[in-house]
Amino acid sequence: MAALPALPAIPSAAQYSSQQSSSEIPKLQETAPDAVGDGVPRCFSAAQMAALRKLADIFAPKMGERPGALDAGVPEFLDFLIGASESERQTLYRNGLDRLNSEARTRFGKDFAALTPEQAKPLLAPLAEPWTYAGPPDPYARFLREAKDDMIQATTSSREYARAMSRRVRSAGGMNFYWLPLD
Image (cartoon, rainbow, N blue to C red; front, side):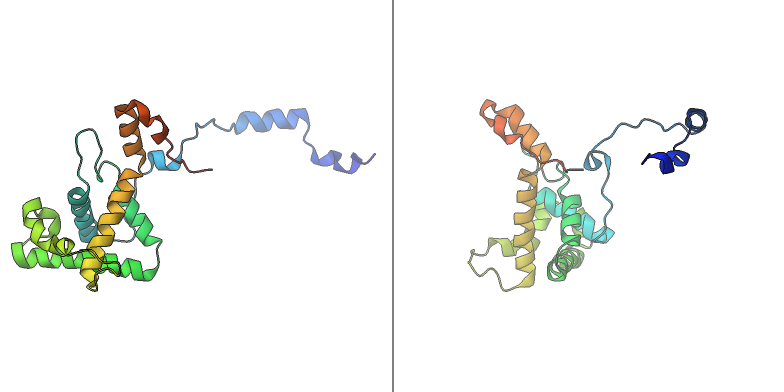
């Protein structure tokens, strides 16, 4: 008796079969979004992104079987991370990348991305200064230190690095704990 008012809303078998044949729902296989999506730069300009890629290649290059920052997609990850960070950190990165490009143009007549690692050394000289707890007072030196730390941490925390290390060493079986996004 309680269900009688709902009977008109339930489609009949004939109505259901006609609806299903005319608009069948395709079966799609699900895939994790980060497994197929290419990152689109959102925080940095094209010139800044190119400088960030070059910096990542210098700070965390590929070494033998160990993937480098470029193999792990670190520049794209940092573009996302810095884009979601507070404005002070975004400004630090943007100004630092702009300064890298302007100093490269002043000294060598080309953007930082076009420099060789040997040409880039003088521009990265603030990294040779002694480490202090307070950090460097110069914003450019602070950018270089933060970028280096971020790139190394992102590389060693990446899925690609975990896979390479678990193939390389038998005792590294526990290193394959890369977290996939929960959907």
